[in-house]
Image 1 (cartoon, rainbow, N blue to C red):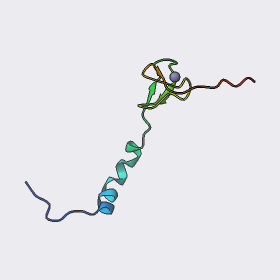
Image 2 (cartoon, rainbow, N blue to C red):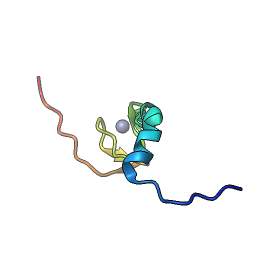
Image 3 (cartoon, helix red, strand yellow):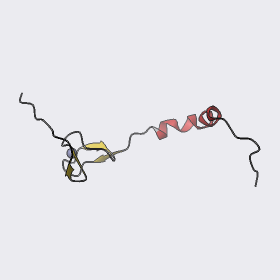
Image 4 (cartoon, rainbow, N blue to C red):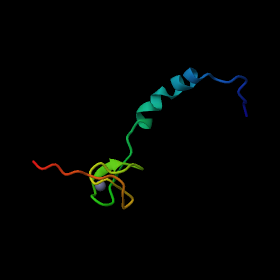
Length: 64
Ligand SMILES: [Zn+2]
């Protein structure tokens, strides 16, 4: 198998990978366990402030 003779610099690697960037930047969302709202995966839900059933953030309900 061919072995690389020299290390590519970062910009060369990025140039090669620029075609995959849109795939890489696809935002992974999952349904929240408590409110079923779409949220960022591995993040506290913005709607209800829970993550994996545990309340982490106080959600202040605004009247009106
Ligand atoms: Zn939620």
